[in-house]
Length: 113
Ligand code: 2BA
Image (cartoon, rainbow, N blue to C red; front, side, top):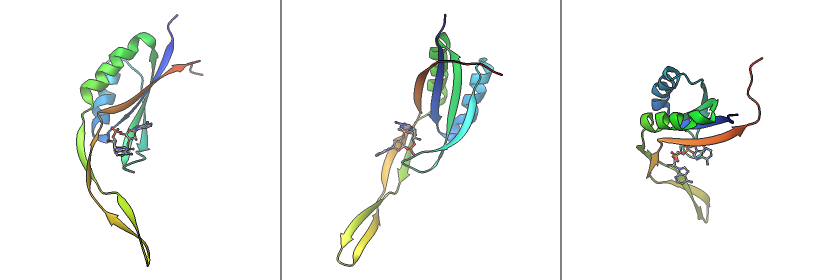
């Protein structure tokens, strides 16, 4: 019997619409959640995709094909301790975001009521 899997994919908002379209066109069910990245504190999208074991590679292929990496400038604040107390100095760093952060989980039960 096939093992049921849950693919959890954190993707950039700009890729989410195309990814959902490709997945549903290929016959895969998906749920889109609005999420926020812990580091950038910006919106991203998390997709939940329940599937049979033998569909996982196809789904990962669609994710690889649609989700792009992008460079993004972020400006974290560094605390500097001085005699009059702490101050915060902004500095810019470039990070590469995406294509996608993906988890593949085993599922005990999968049913609709
Ligand atoms: P964020 O946490 O907002 O991270 C956005 C991007 O910032 C990351 O892209 C990475 O390039 C950079 N970044 C993250 N933490 C960093 C750090 N401590 N120092 C320097 N740069 C850092 P991605 O790796 O493509 O991650 C995109 C999004 O995927 C993340 O957004 C987060 O929402 C999710 N994610 C990444 N790793 C995760 C994990 N282990 N568990 C759960 N979600 C994760």
